[in-house]
Image (cartoon, rainbow, N blue to C red; front, side, top):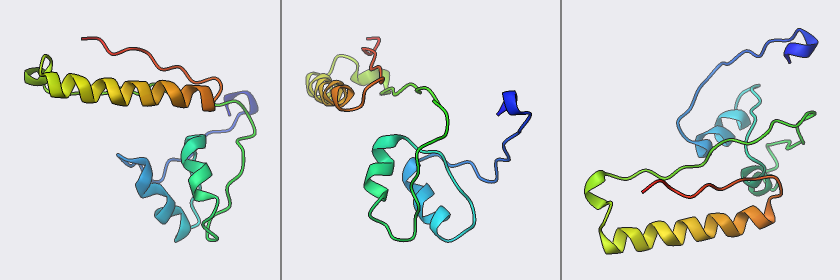
Length: 103
């Protein structure tokens, strides 16, 4: 946008991706969402899902938990499952980087 002397106008900021589709469906807004989420939205006839005209890069995906669960065996297991699933998704979505958590 900067190279074309354009500036985006942010109308709404949300805390979770899944709140965006309904908002876009009932307004004249548009949104930029991760490809994986867009794939699931393509079936919604109220939405028009298109590729971004430029490479938007990537964004970090992180897990967070309370310090008291750092060494909890069940919590460590769950974090491992989530991490492994995310790593599997990287193979499906080229160009994505999953970094190991800092424990």
